Length: 146
Image 1 (tube, rainbow, N blue to C red):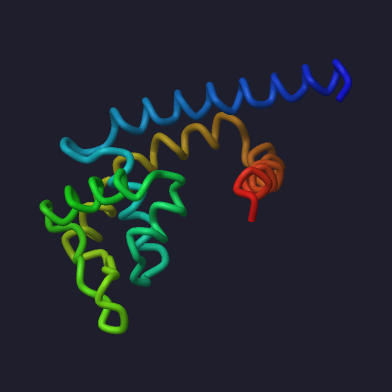
Image 2: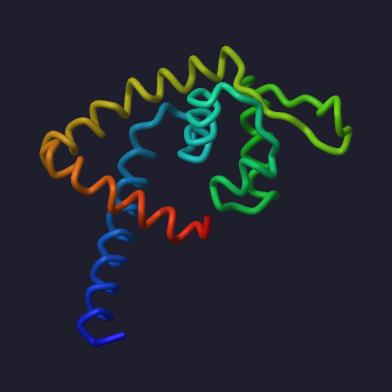
């Protein structure tokens, strides 16, 4: 790799890391009391897919350890936001589904953070955001190794 490519790669990832940190901090402050970004992320995924997932599937999807996902799911279950049930086909596995209370909590959180997100898109301009999405999607796919 040339020095120019090294510099470009460092600039790209520096911007990504800075944007990620700022976005996480901003959204964490905006979320309802007691809800963490990891909770919202899991609830949002389950609400959007409307399919049950195993803890291992969720851990892989969010690039966290199974232990970290178990911790998040335990908190969500205690709050009544997810249902955890045994897999009837394989008793060693559990299946996770969003509960009606979890869907309400996700919707309430989304109502709070949507204006924040929309403002950023508005500030940048929709054309610029649309142009960035394929690049970011490609980067995510490349980094995930899928």
